[in-house]
Image (cartoon, rainbow, N blue to C red; front, side, top):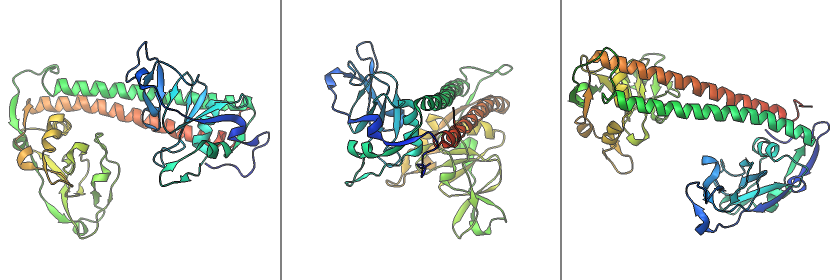
Length: 382
């Protein structure tokens, strides 16, 4: 989204300094700072960065009284110039700029406007950064104040929906994690199952499908899975490419568990739903018939014990899992019918999570579409 060549009807064009006082953040009195919020340190401290909205602990005093914007003034291109609306009192520190309204601008509106319609030119000093004078000179469109507030309210409603979805997803993930811990250790048994679990080594319940093929010789239409196609700690396939080229690949079949053996701590795993080929940096793990099932093996590779054992690797710059070590990892196993039932319960939880995440992505796309319409004046709230 870019600035219109001419403002929409009834909108003006001014500089940010016409609307806001722009100041750089200062230092903090670290004797009055605390990592966690408590009654003695109630005020959030914000610094650069988009992670955790730039939160950097809490202070016993506030420099700003709220209803302001913070702008990241130094960092990566993805962080530089990103703005947040700060409703309540806070203390800014570090390479951060603060925009305080002069009374003719709605800070909530311009926090969204800056993110959606402003592209700052960074200072050429070897480090990506913005300065207060540079930001102050930037031109922006200025709708009537009543329209600014209406747009800000509409976008705020969507943000509230996104926030609610984020909290619900986090709660569901915690529930699944707890359920995995209890079901995979036998702390909780599903109705209808009893009996002792057995101890076995991973190498006794699964093996690597060590079938190498040339990608170019794979059947027509075969898909290839590379490491970057598997989501980190999600168990989801993000994409594929056509199998081609002269490089060797592993073949895999539906029901195999693809596990990324390069930098195993990244937790890249996927339960295959079709036949194809994959990078040799990925192990296609096959459940041994009568010992385990695909769904339960898929759960085992997600556990910290499995990932920790897989992270005992060889190679310094490109650490790869050592099967000779991993195959000796001991795990607890119920009978296959109970394994299948456990996998079904946790798969249902995964599907519920996936549905919520799809809903969140659709809501984000809706917000982006709203921003395109509202922040450019193509759709008016009057």
